[in-house]
Amino acid sequence: MRVETGRAMAVKVEIQPMPSCSDCANYTETGKGTGECRMAGPVPADRDKDRCPVRLFVPKRS
Ligand code: SF4
Image (cartoon, rainbow, N blue to C red; front, side):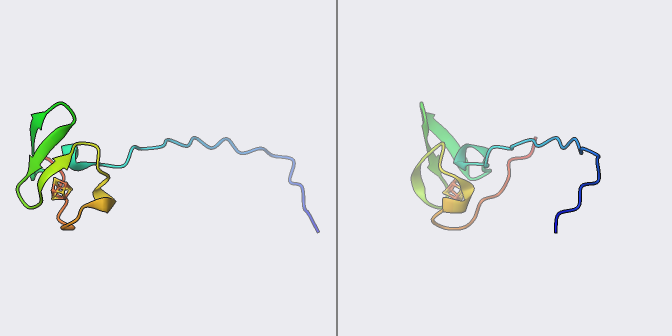
């Protein structure tokens, strides 16, 4: 059974981009779209933190 309340809810959904190597404190940019990780060596800037091979993502301080 479906119950209708007669009210609509406004929900604002903001999609945050997944942090990536370029947002990590272990990352140093070495070229356009590429960098060097202190732990994993050369890495792409846009690698999602969930795909970090060493599982050591540390957010950069802002
Ligand atoms: S520690 Fe992981 S997330 Fe951070 S720069 Fe290295 S590979 Fe990327």
